[in-house]
Image 1 (cartoon, rainbow, N blue to C red):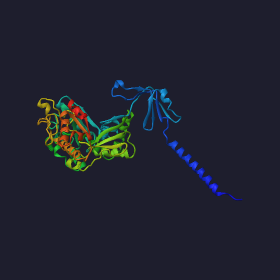
Image 2 (cartoon, rainbow, N blue to C red; image 1 turned 30 degrees about the vertical axis):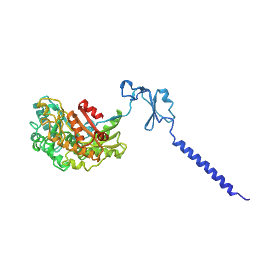
Image 3 (cartoon, one colour; image 1 turned 60 degrees about the vertical axis):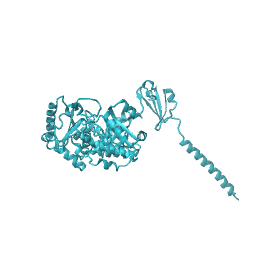
Length: 460
């Protein structure tokens, strides 16, 4: 018996070609986009945000989602046509359905330490809040509170007190509340007293900060001198004492990360998908990176670098070595550039052009203008030397941007029109044109009291 193998192999080859072609077709079919939704939400009030005018925003009943994209919105009957056997169907039960929210200014890495359940896990984070309309009564209550807390907690544990209202509290700083007065009532504890507009530290607090960061606090921190313990700065101290010194104490860091994670989860539950913040203290950066690399960030984080600024005696030299991080990171955590933080101070420390009696203007906290920059709102009466650090930081970043070495300068905290004018004029003093400035990723927070002309300039 003779077998013609040439026909056999020819037939086999053709069969293989058909099978291979079928496999390709099947593969293509599998790779195609399904006409059905992965998730459908019915029976809701879908707020589409399809108009800038709240009166014109359309509201639908249902929404269909595929992957990370919205396929369609419409009536229940229309969206039901996109349901397959495997589609997840959610009954909104008449509740509102909104687009994911982007929180453009938040300090969750720091504010999370003030939530009650976080404080219960880390009692060291407790801050005593006090209020009195009289400076004398505020001081008397403060001294009693610090002495009582010193009897309750072990030697060496932080005692932090927040005084309000700021307008009353700042009148006592450097006068009846001083480094020495806090040493008397809390000699064995680091004591930190603050309000929006300033702070006072005792000897143990100053020593603890300098030991942690490895350098003496720069002289610009003090409103008069180191011995008085009175500073116009408060956020560097309040945030970094909590996030660095207390959170990094033995047994605390895991608790801090957990609290930070849980507060971000709470934000996710109310619809926040992304938040933006500067990271002012290295503990906040380390905790954020830990959550990111373990795929545990509940919401996305756009962050501005700032932790080289607090307590650093060499701001200019440091930031000239950082480089341009803008846009670098992961899908859930990425850099938006380097930030200086507050140009002026919050609370009573705004820098404004508003005319007022010298007793009021002297409470403002305008930074000294850099050489060659003139801002009419900044005068001898409302300029404070401790904010010269912020001016140095601002001029350094502006010059780096002018030189093309950085492309993002986010997170300027500005309260008054004088501070915003300083920001504009410092950029221009580098020789940058308005066209060049517009190409940079520049962003300011707060801007409580600015002019219409400044708003128009910012838009341009």
